[in-house]
Image 1 (spheres, helix red, strand yellow):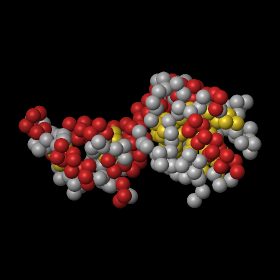
Image 2 (spheres, rainbow, N blue to C red):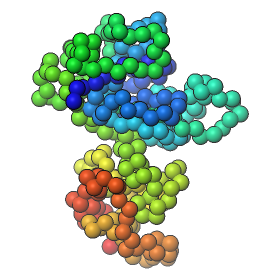
Image 3 (cartoon, helix red, strand yellow):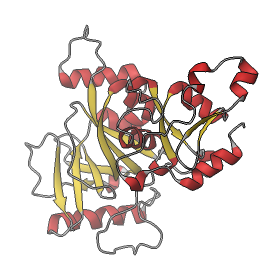
Image 4 (cartoon, rainbow, N blue to C red):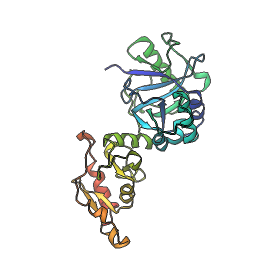
Amino acid sequence: MPIKLVVAVTDDNWFELLRRQPNLAEVNFWAPSAASFRALQPGEMFLFKLHSPRNVIVGGGIFAYANALPCSLAWEAFGVANGARSAQEMRARIAHYRHIPPEDRSDFAIGCRILTQPFFFEEQDWITVPRTWSPNIVSFKTYDASDADGLALWEAVNDRLHRAAAPRVAEPEVPRFGAPQLIRPRLGQGAFRVLVTDVYRRRCAVTLERTLPALEAAHIRPYGDGGEHEARNGLLLRRDIHSLFDAGYVTVTPDLHFEVSRRIREEFDNGKHYYALHGRAIELPADATLHPDPNALIWHNEHRFRE
């Protein structure tokens, strides 16, 4: 399958803030509407273009995932990596694009295009858009790396990444000017949260709670203890159950059942609601390849759970 690239028109304030942020692992290239985004597959390149008349490509990232989220949850997941200094600033900017009156305080959904390994070029390295770029484009245009313009973009971006101090987006073994190919996205905390939320169909794996602001993506094996930001190392849990899971008062067994420690009763003289859930089989992702990693569950049972 040919490799594709997207060139998307960026909000100038978004770009100017993020280009000055050190050590960004991921960014949320949001769209004011919640329209679905299917132009790329994970591992393809998503590039930023400034607004006309500055018809130049100024950076990009590796596309990891796309979905729609309430703007408040997008802020919780990505913070300043949304290209805003606060949730209020982000909401005001989205409201401006959507022509929403100030008195409307609804938590509207926005489109999230999650990019990993973001890079921002120095001005002398900005790339002029291909001649096939139309001034009428207000969102994005897709290029095929098997065509002349797409291949030229691929080579121009990789040339700058190899020459500059910007982070490499390719694995070390990838040849400097090899054929266009997918680049494995390295998910960050925000992408992990969004991915796990969708994998579990936006409901708690234990209680089936579907109130989205009450749900959190839990690492089975914490990132700081060697766990990865991967779907198989995640569970979508209600906030209180997430807290108990991290503290070791509950766990999920390798045979995928919810288990509650006796310590809740002993230490807090409480927990009736949680004990009612003891032994329940958890709800699993529809895709069996995304089911919880048994090794991660064993780790949590052996190293975190308070029997």
